[in-house]
Image (cartoon, rainbow, N blue to C red; front, top):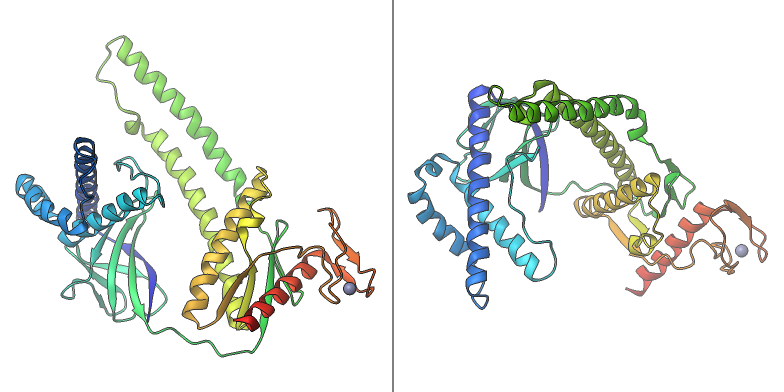
Length: 389
Ligand SMILES: [Zn+2]
């Protein structure tokens, strides 16, 4: 059984939206107060053992008596928040994470997670969903929903769309075995280069929408300056009660439009990466990729490089969990000399500058496309490793 996240777009009515906002607030309140308490506790006595999620839940019951309004919040979500906080706090002390931050109402994306208990989540007629403390609302999703639900995360995007992300336990779908293996090189102009010669181009989704996004970015900057000047002016001369920045509707509109385009770009990129990884796990039983840590050493602050880096990381993550789901194998190898060794005869031709896209092996005289040769080498390393294990 594997855990899988299934995202549904949900359509709460105004009252339900209010309830969702209320729950965001309650979870934020619990997180911030518990964090504050843990920090002070540590300052007062650094030798005390850190509190466990269990301790935090006990404190929560006392806390609820003090802040009666919290009783209206979805109660399992507050426990999940405690657990998240415990993990974030512990993660910092074991040096795996940054110190947990206080949460702000102004953060454009908000979420909380509820546990599945006593059928508090239910799918009705494939078009309605019952959610804890929120009641029934319409949803949209093409896929069928498995019956075992573990958690549900209610999320509001920066463009005020609402989602329910179901964490479901699912029997993995087994893809038919193909008895094929593939090596993959990741590049900048071609995102993915396969040892069988297939290439997936890098698509700059950000460029396609750049004009529209930039148009709104300029407006956003201008409207922000105008609003701030207006506020300053009113304060200086004691004119009517000055508004906050968030009350300037044209500023808010521009902010929303910028967020909308960023979201669109991110979604298009994700869809493309899903398509590539889906094809790879369908066609091959073993996928060999290079360890990106070594590749990242090529520090370059060019935007295309930054985007490539991010896409590679996401690709690897998708391959990791998709191979797990579909019963395929992912091998990660050290890309040592993969761009200079001939994949046909093993001859080491020495370093090839980045501008050399094709070369001939002086030993066996085979003609190489640089990237395809590299991906063949990656596959060879993977096949050797698989034999040793
Ligand atoms: Zn050769």
